[in-house]
Length: 403
Ligand code: FEO
Image (cartoon, rainbow, N blue to C red; front, side, top):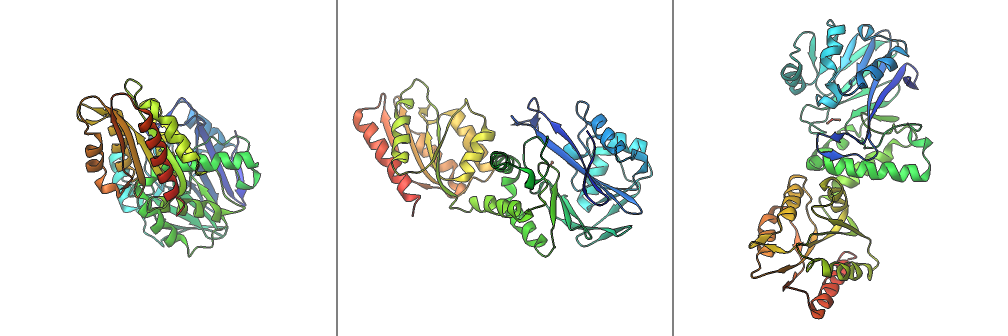
């Protein structure tokens, strides 16, 4: 692979992690993810972010650097927007090749740089509005965007080209192969990357949605001509689209989200499963789209994306030893961590000798600000009346999403 020119004197270097990897060690990526870095060349040369030290990715990275042509020791300045090891894993080796490099990073980033890599020399701590003039009509301006994704994160803006190197912000899953820019996408590819952005956001960013809104507000004053994130597409035709998309995602957590339902179900011996179809039909009878997941079979990474986007959630779970079915309890614990807030929720499920799941559900989700529709519960196998009642309650939930 070669570095790709994205503006005069500005290059994108990128590698793809494939589906064999779990992002952050836990999130599946069936279509991989790209890790993007950027070179800005004026009279001096800056490298913005690095690459994970995994497989042969540093070798690929160096080959791209060589294609400019540059070597590690030719870089004058290293800008570290974010210390997470997907962008800094290769830093110790890079640093050994270029020990005199000047590093630009936020104050919290500098502490992490010391902790992760033991680097303290030639470190310049920057704040919002600080600049680095590269000469040759290239000037970098730094903007702290805390918690996008870690507290030390910043974005870097190149003033002359109007390119915002936004790091994790405005990123997505999905490998980059033949299409790097938003204006190169077919309609299917566009939909693909929008879905990849949704899942990435739900997995990685949603806990920090309040900070997404703050960052967007802070960056609003900039004349952004291109958004070049550290994962996913470069937005050069319509950078506002990905900004608006992130703004919409952040809004999902305040509610209402989309008029859609996510149904998550689990079953021990099939008695809760027997009511799933009635729930689905009840929702569909109102023309409301429904996303269906089973736990523990489906991965939480996919469930979170559906649930974040949906205003309505239906949970099918039996009572298990006076409490929620444990895989569902774990799922809802993740909902708490990722702030899947302000949803309209209906639960259904069977019990053997005593209920208890509904009570635990309401207690555990108190902080999520959920509104509950009356549950559908029964002992043992569901009767015809139970199935009818389930369809009615699902219909009622679906109707409420249209209001
Ligand atoms: Fe792409 Fe938070 O690292």
